[in-house]
Image (cartoon, rainbow, N blue to C red; front, side, top):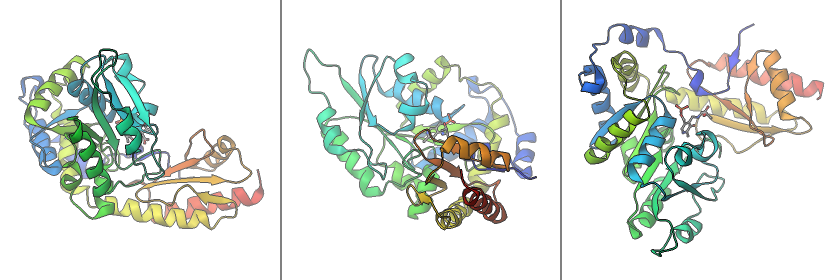
Length: 344
Ligand code: TLP
């Protein structure tokens, strides 16, 4: 039985050509800035995001934390959405390690920040108050369903930040998916943020890594914070080579993942009792199944070789990626259909 692993696009394995690039990578000690492959990846990433400089990090989590540490003073506050990845899945690093307060405002179903609330949450200068130091946004928005924030949405955040002289950090773990969905270059979306982090280890199928992009002075600070967080890697070209290959050869294929997510969601929504939550806009599909405990459904699907994640709030998540082809999508839908027909 073939396993159809739809838990996340993080499960992607490097394709043979990427492994070849890894094997042939030119290496040096990156803490001395001597690794030509890391330097190349950082140049390429900065260019893709339209920023002055970039920093290769171990993970999206490390990129986001490094960005927050670099933008903010200890004891200050970050404003971000209540459904954001930073709040839910990054182990509270911002407050545990950064001494930062996370002030959440509601995300709407599209993953947008409630800007009226955000405006209200920005602190005025008062001897009693902590300082507001940063606004974070996420695009695509994971927990909201891989939803895509438009340029207008991002411009509105920028305008609010500018009114209060605040920097904006964009958790763009899947920004290339958002850019694809909108049909614009990623840099056009990143222009509204001072810093942007995007993942290499999701749809781009690298084994490890994320890149944090921003201004030259910001990235110099970020390099020091990354070192503090244990992210000063030595012959990191061995993994950066995968990133170079991915930026050259894997970006266009994200379109297949979006198409497979659309076909998957069409198939699932034809199963009685299944409701999409919401219809997918990128490579993430969320759905609910009436009358089923989601944990039980996850287990039963797993026993039949279809791996997915239950979100703990009634929703099941499936994510398409380069390890999933149209046959897998068809089979996953057929298995959901027969399980649901058999009853809980
Ligand atoms: N998301 C993972 C899990 O952590 C939930 C996934 O399977 O979707 N920002 C966003 C928007 C993300 O979705 C993720 C990973 C990260 C940051 C963190 O990236 P990593 O896993 O590289 O630390």
